Amino acid sequence: MKKIVVIGVVFLISLFILSACVSDKEESSKDESMHMDHTSSGEVPKGLKVAEHPTYKVGSKAIIETDHMKGMKDAEATITGSYDTTAYVISYFPTTGGDKVENHKWVIQEEIKDADDKTLAPGTEVTIEADHMKGMKGAPAEIISAEKTTVYMIDYTPTNGGEEVKNHKWVTEDELSPINP
Image (cartoon, rainbow, N blue to C red):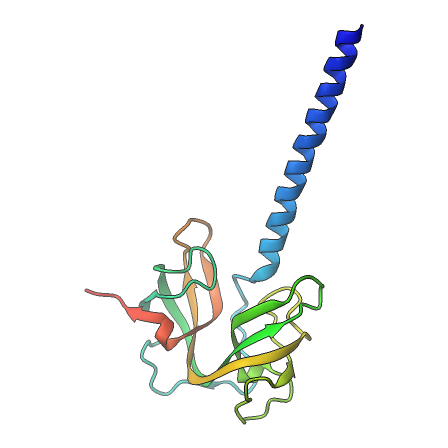
């Protein structure tokens, strides 16, 4: 009888440990999924100006040279939009709670509440209107840096597998390179 009780206790402890591991993995996946909304509708903010002379034209292809997300670097991108604006690196606390997001690239001028058309200086406190990530829309943020540039909306398939990402916002011109023939 003692053997059966011991085996039962060991079984229950093992089951408890395994369920805790699965729960931690699910939480980790939830955390990662909160970060970027990989695919968007392709809607752009009101007032955003289409680039007149972009390096990469809509429909052209380029190589992604940045790693905003896993599987992004070295992926082939198809350009779905190009716009002239000011791109900002920001830090903010998600409205959904959790840790501060540091040095998020990119939020553009037209995605900042009441930004008008003047470039905002580092240290400026703003409210974000973009919803690239859960908890971003309406979040208070601090401008870390600003860059007048052409930003691109892109489609790409992650190099680490997974489904095609559609209308990803945003990469800057210097985060793309031409495809060599």
